[in-house]
Image 1 (cartoon, helix red, strand yellow):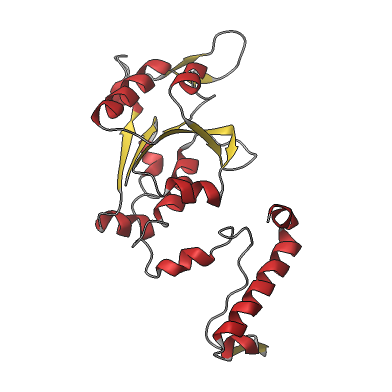
Image 2 (tube, rainbow, N blue to C red):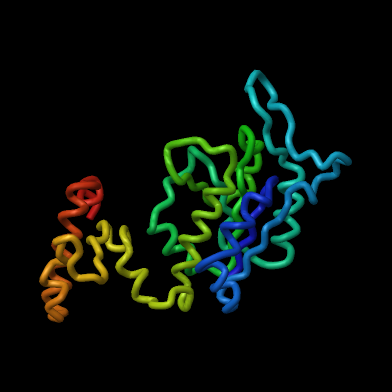
Length: 226
C-alpha cells in the first residue's frame, strides 16, 4: 500500500509517522508513506501557497494551483483509488472507513490548513472528504496522521497478533469490553473469575455481554445502528 500526504507544514507529521506500528509496517514493506511539502510545488518565489479569500471571508486559503500541480504529478505516475481531503464539514471518519481504505492500493490525503482550500480543489480533485470530529483544528495534519494510523494497523502483518484488530472497539458496531492483566488481584480488586476459568466459549460469551453493556452505558447510539 502507498499513502501520499500533501501538507503545507510537513514537520507536523514527522513524529506520528515515524514510530510504533506505522514504523514497523514501513520497515516490513507493508506500506510506503510519502509526505509532500506543498511549498515545493508553488511557482511563487517566496514559496507562498495561500492567499486572501475573495469576498469578505476572513482567513487565508490554500491556492488551487500548487495543489493541482502536485496531484497531477502523482496521478501521472500511478492510479489512485481515493484522493481524500481532511475537512471539518466532511463525513465523519469511522472504523468502517478505515477498514475500506485498508483494502486500497494507493491513496492521497490532502491536509487542509488556514481557512481551508480553494473550493475548486474540493469540486474537481477530491474523491472523499473526512472529518475526525465536530471541532476545528489549525490544519489537517493531525487528522491525516490519525486516519493513516487507523488504516495502517489493519494491514496484514502490521500488528503482532492480527486477531487483535478484530476485537477493537467499533469493528462489530460495539465498544470493546474491559480488559485485564496480571496480577489477578491487586488491593483486593479481583479480575472477574470467568476470565481465569480457561473456558473459551464462556469467556467469549461473557465478553460479548460486557461489550453490549459497555456500549449501552457509553454509546447507546451505536446500538441503534447495530
